[in-house]
Length: 108
Image (cartoon, rainbow, N blue to C red; front, side, top):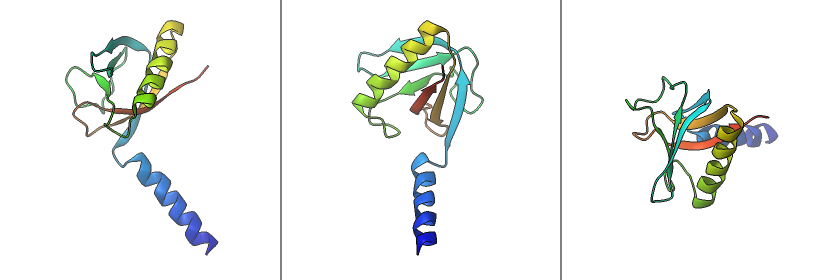
């Protein structure tokens, strides 16, 4: 029974991440806030996994499980990374037309 619960928990964690989610790490080239409160990130090194020609990665409330609070938190972290000149790692859906970011990570 314990093995079954563990297996279901692991399956749940993997499927929650999404089969099309990929990671990309780079410095930020541009942050572009939109009037909707959403924003775009451009990187100094483009992701080969993002199919967009302009290589924009969007943070959009309601897309790829992003909430308004999550979007605000990600903008804060992105601004911090850009200010410090640090790389960030983003997780995004490579099949999304907006290369929609779900989460990001900043290492110090």
